[in-house]
Length: 332
Ligand SMILES: [Zn+2]
Image 1: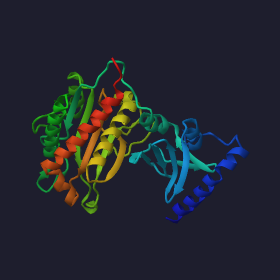
Image 2: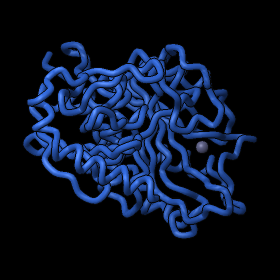
Image 3: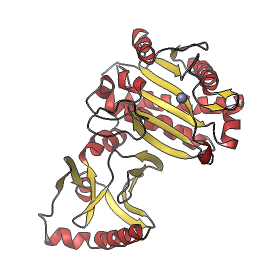
Image 4: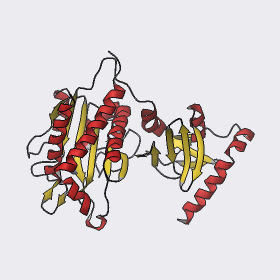
């Protein structure tokens, strides 16, 4: 804690002096290589993209603004806020040479897809969504007494299917009954059915000592060359995978869905995250995995079991998918 306060003070001083320093030593490193990772000085990136570092307060260290856009970065932390939504960076923001540095890979795969949304090829529309209700059959997923995650992921998927069809989209499900479908089969089904998006649905569980944890997380695939937020041992290798072809769209999709969920549901924003979950690794189309709340939390679990709440959750997911569709589609 003391270290954090010292760091904060140091940053305040460093940022206060940044202008004078920039003028007196224009050669101050714009790029660094730390532990094999390329880092870029945040103020240099900000200037090049017409953002200004406007204020420093509490533990919000660097706040970049341009019009309505507001980015908040914290020293030694991977947690960023992009227009009020929590997004986990791949690498922590580093303090060097009197200022914050951001990893080049985060600029490419985290910030740029959100600030300059990727576009589909002309005329390429988002028409078919593959919904993937997590678990099934003998694989129950999270357990809360007699409540099994696999049942609620399927109920959510069915509600979501109905709402997406009403919104004019085609929908296919990886399972419609209580059966176990192998993970590679799920993404293969999506590909063979011509899905344009893949959306895996899960509910979370924390260990019994952590039953105060609640909130929503939306995952997309970790880019090659970075470690995962939470991969539970899956896919520890960092080489490129099929899903990495869609790094930019994966992030933009995850952000749109997550934003819609945390803005419309009374829950906590646990952030857009990266992981190498099998379905994200193998998906041939932009893909996300939604952890729609904690079955281990006393009150959040009751909501998850409530069809009215799941309808609201489905509605928020539909809005997020439609926001993505609107922004990636170009004219014919
Ligand atoms: Zn699950």
